[in-house]
Structures are given as structure tokens and as C-alpha cells.
Image 1: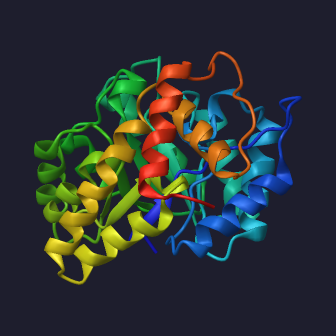
Image 2: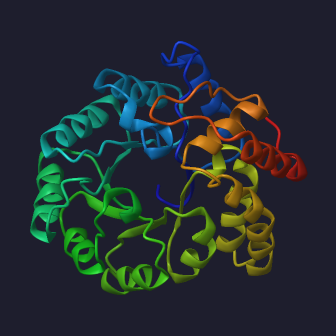
Image 3: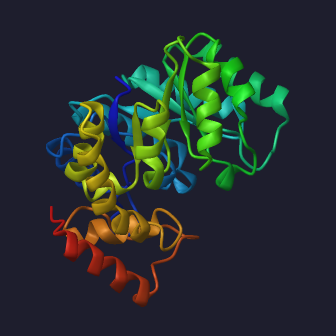
Length: 291
């Protein structure tokens, strides 16, 4: 279930900033046609920070109901009790796994992080994928901690977005033979991470270029290293464009440009500068990305 490309999907809004439920379903259909292995609703790219609890749960329910691929639902929080509630809901809704970010802002010590994830895993009957993204959370889940957590029942993998290949290598080394899954959380180093042992990517760029992203990962999986490398460099300008400003600002603009459901951002996120949006559109047009 944890091999391949898993787009961290955007949450489309209507002009009044309410959920665009029909648009969400259309976007999922587009991604499935692109060959993705699964989808990840309610992550950073889905503007989870500004979704109410009710909206968060509704997005997960829609994803589960309409998707024909596995759903890894974002259910993390810096409040352990809230994370348990969201993770239990995802399990009850029929999600295939839950993605739990390291507790942000609180900056717990290693013992606190271990107990946070262990408590959630013990109380929720669903496979759990850890999510390490220190540039967002302010804390880094070190390989020693990830290895300890890999021995907790239900904790099956990690989305690694530290940007450190050395850290990825250590996690692979410390969890070797256990079946623990490592997914790239950084589109720009997905291919290098796969050479170290990652099995796929939770991707931002796959929202707009699912076919090319899937083709790169599939090429590597079948041993076509040159083909994978070629696609990595074809995607590189688009990957850079998706991070011209804070994610998901560029990817929502790109989806709207392509005719996918996107809509406005919720504050405190604001639209791209005209110059950066023009640069992003030029990259999309050069690559020929269309819905």
C-alpha cells in the first residue's frame, strides 16, 4: 500500500471560502487517472491548519467515499487528545492509514514525542505514518526516535521531509528488515531518497503533474535508472515553481491555471505575487501540463 506516488491533495474552496466538495471529487478523479498509488487529504498542502474539525472530517469522508486508491488521512495535531479524535475518525471513516505530523509549536522533548505517538497508536486501530518536517514544526524527529517508534504496533512508516539524505540513510539502517516504510516528503529529492530505500513520495507536484511523477517513480522501481533520472530533471523546474512561495500557495494557483478545482486561499495565506505567478505559469506551459 505504501509504494508509489501519494499526492498531498489541495482542499478546494468556493469563493465564499466554504468547501468545494464537488471540486474535491473531480480533483481526486484527475489524480486517479494519472495513476497515483493513493491520496493524502488534510495535510499541509490541504490547508489543514485552517480547516475546522468538522471540515477536516468531511474532507476525509469525501476522499474515502470517492477514491478508488488508498487514502492516508492527515490527522496530526500538537494536542494529543485532538490527534486521537481525528485519527479515530479517519479509521471509522474507512481511511487506510493516518499521517501524523510531529507536534508543532509545543517543541516536546524526545520522551514527549515518543509518548505522543505511542499513545495515539495504542488508542487507534489504523496504520500510522509519522511525518517529520522540522522546517514547519520546529523539531526534528531524529533517526533514533523514529527507530524506537517503528517498534510500536500500528506505526508502519515515516514521511521524511527533513531534507537530509544522511538522516534518511540512518533511518533505513536502523529499521532494516522490519518492513518499516519510508516515504519522501520532498519532491526535489524523491529520486535520491529512493536510491537509499524510500518506497515512494507524498508529493506536492503530483497535484499538477501526476503522470510524470508516477512515471519517474515507476521507472526507478523497475530498474530504469536513466529513465527515472531523465524524468527527475524534466520535473525539476516544476518542483522549484511549486515552492516559489509557501506551500500550498503556488500549487493552488497552478491547479486553478490548469482548470482544476482550487479556489481562494484562506488567510493568513495570500495569493502569489504577479511576478512569481507568471513564472510558475510559464513553467506549466513549457511542460504542457493540462487537466
